[in-house]
Image (cartoon, rainbow, N blue to C red; front, side, top):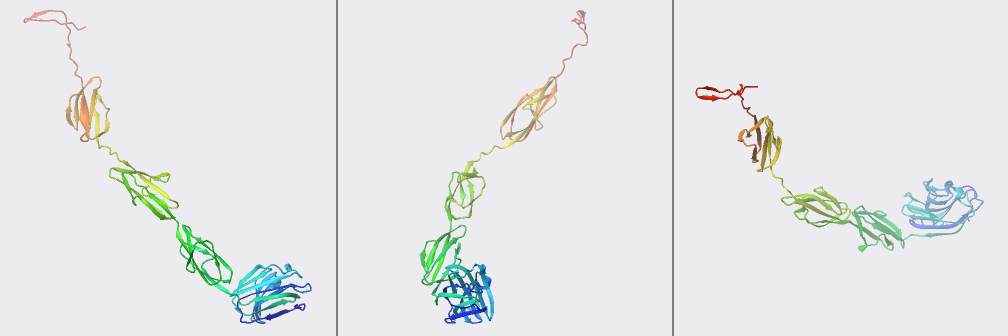
Length: 398
C-alpha cells in the first residue's frame, strides 16, 4: 500500500538502470480517500529527475504517458479525463518499452503509444501523486527477446506494412500482405531464401527473417488473324502483351486491293493502323477488297448552232476513253442540217455522226435556212400568143 494522501509525488523504484526493453505490469486500485485519482507505472528510471511514467489520472487525464528530464516534467500523449478513473476499481496497467517505442495498456486494451528517445534505459517503479493506492502485484519481464523482420521491395507493388526493418517479440506472428500495382499481379515471396506463394503471409518470429515480394506483369493475348488479299504489320500470329500496353497493327493490302475495315473481337473499326489497348485478350482480323479501277474519261462538248438541236442535247459529257458516241442533229422548222464541225474541222454532212472518244472533242452541229422556191410575178392567162414559132400559156394573177 502506498499512502499518498499528503500532497506530493511518491515513488517506489527497483531494478537495474541499464535495463532497456521490457514488459512491465501491475494490478491495483486507487482508494476513495485519495486527493487525486492517480496511479502510474515508472519505466526508464535513472534518478528522481529523469524517468518516464504512464498510467491513470495524471495531468487530469484518464490515461497519459509523461516524462521528466533534468527535473522538467512534460506530458507526451494523453486521452480522456481524470473523472473517468473510478476509485476502488481494480485496474491492470501495463507498459511495453521497446527501443524508443512506449506503449500503454489498461486491462489488456491498448491505450496510447509514443516514440521518445530521451531516456533509452532505466529501472522500473510505481508513481502516485496525492493519492492512496493498493497494489496486488507487479510483474516485469526483462529483457524481452526480440527478432527482426526485414521486408524488402521489388518492382510492381508494395507491401503492408511497407518495406523496412521491424522488431517483434519472440513467438509472435507477423502478417505481411503483398499489394500489386495496377497492371501487375503477385507472384511469390522469398522468405529466407525459400519460395512461398500464400498472400498474405504469416511469419513466426522465432528468429530473424528476411522477406521479399515478387510481382509480374498481368499479360493478355493478342491474336492477329491472317486474311486473303493482304497481310499485317506485325505479321499474323498470337502475341503475349503486358496489360495496359497499346499495340499498333497496320493492314497492308496486296496490289490491286484496298483495306476495308478491321474485325476487332465482335466489333469493327476503319482505323488503319489500329491501336489495340491490351486490357483483355483481343482478336483482330483485317478485311480487304478488290479495287475496281474506273476507265479513263474524255470530255465531249456538243454545241448546236442556230436552227436546231442535237440528241444528246448540247452539253459537255464525260465519256469512257475510246468509246464511240452517236450524235444526231435535228433542225428546227425552216432550217436544214448543214454539217458537223469536229474540233473545228468539217466531219460530215449527214445528220448522224459517230464520234470516237480517243481524246477530248468539241462537236458543233450547224444548220442553214431552207431556200424558198421563186413564183411567177405575173399572171398566167389562157391566151395563146403566136409568134416566133412558140406558144405560151399564161395565167392571170388573181
